[in-house]
Length: 216
Image (tube, rainbow, N blue to C red):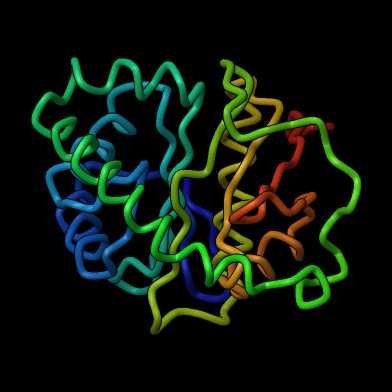
């Protein structure tokens, strides 16, 4: 059953969404696990339909997709098995991860220039004891959340997270983590406004939140 909120619908991914969603991902040049090619998008979306390691929730306004969120459960296990399920896409993973190392070196100055004084006061100064590399069957990672330009400032990001958390809680997920760039003010604001604890790492913000069963 889909959820209605201010004339847009929030619902789990359906098979019929794949062509449109992958086209929009390609147009927006999004990156999921360092992947940014249409074959890789198809592989990840198909996994969301076929297994419980990937959860995708979409927002639909009228007959158009307005946004989506992708979460991966037990992220380490998922990516270890990814090349066996999708060998061609795995070659793309290797290429883009190597390219990412070059990007990090080139872009590091941009990250360092964002000082603590310039970041939101809500950023926690107390370490949570959690890190991105931690992975288990009770931890989900946000691989990507995106709202397309024509549909921003409608509260879609918040509603995507609400629906995603309900789905994850039903699957026994207790914790969700996300990473956002230091200079991505829109993403930082979304996570702070939806109750995530955020802390500064060397080159980004690490966000984490606990989720509970819907009836709690």
